[in-house]
Image 1: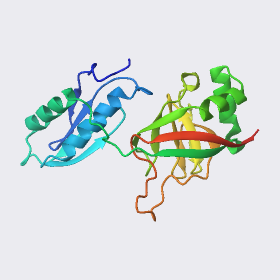
Image 2 (image 1 turned 90 degrees about the horizontal axis):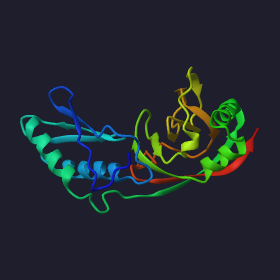
Image 3 (image 1 turned 30 degrees about the horizontal axis):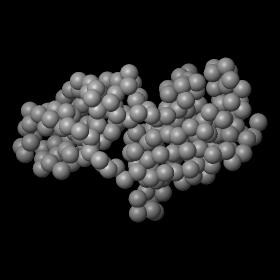
Image 4 (image 1 turned 60 degrees about the vertical axis):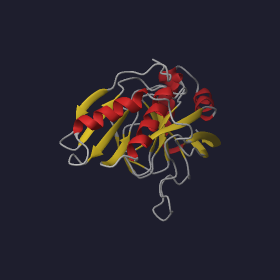
Length: 228
């Protein structure tokens, strides 16, 4: 279901202990319209300015509010979120940047690229073209330091995760699964399908801002090479 500012889904509220509440819109990813996610980003910005709010962690279609109950009671948190949810999205809530990521498709994990092509009933060239000609939006960061969850993957490439995760996938792996795309920031186990590799530095602790991506950023993948 697509969400616009005029179509505000009811939030599902879950208490997460004494000092945190999870608010979940409970809807499918709304890329590329971003009506729902933009509203979540806006609510997050408004909440961060309130005394008693410790942190707001934004996810995909949800956000977690941590707070100090002595300064901000549970009921007041819920009321503020309800009020902000009905308001118009903030203009310029995010400092959006664009990123172009060079990818070598195939290579060490060629079997995954072949599996994606077979599942999608496309040729490998068609998979690469679809992936590399689409624009993606960073919805949130998580799982690993700076790892972006990207909306905007073409529906033809919507493939479930691997039935058996790999024990080790190198950092810089370009991955897709469950209607999303991403780039590993650290060498780790991974159950997503690896379709290529990049040298793009997703997370560098030595930088002033270690995480390269931020919510709202635009990402494009560009073909650097194909190793079949």
